[in-house]
Length: 111
Length: 110
Image (cartoon, rainbow over all chains, first blue to last red; front, side):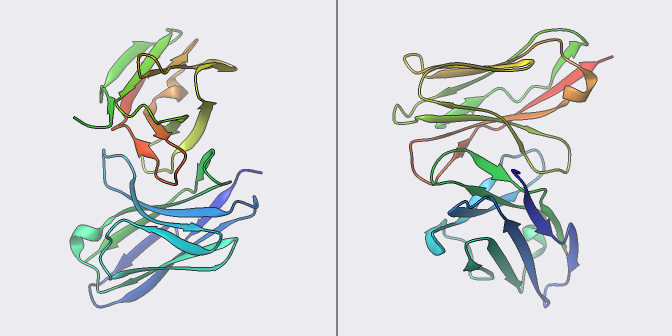
């Protein structure tokens, strides 16, 4: 099973809201990722967790806050977002630095 | 110069054609090479993975890596309308940073 699941599929939020995106994998992968993807662009790396520790933060604004409660779960907490943050948010996982598997994404609209 | 270059297309081919998709790269440290297929408004789906140089075949798909030329290819045989999607190449030097090409939009016409 090479499945990464993400919830919710769609999210609409106002600029003052707080919301969370969730990601889960049961492949025993030790690395989990958050990407942001705008239309007609490749995925853009935001964060990487390796063995449940944050190993890469690509200078992402603090209104995005990642959390890795355990090796199977990854959250992205959102607060005070801007309309330009509207995008497809993708979670991915990999066993160390090999093949990376993506989830279906959460389509976020910030009003 | 970008680390990974990929022709954005769109590339239109008739059904049944052989499709060739390519990426060039500049970082000789890249060792892990992947091809993803992404349908509109969906997450990327891993199609092929190659470590270092060589060829790999899976059904109608063949991936080639030429490290001496810093060039990777994905061939799709007997293309189908369902293959219409954006194809992304991605590569890594063994860190957690995967560098993506911009993606090539493919249309297979019935």
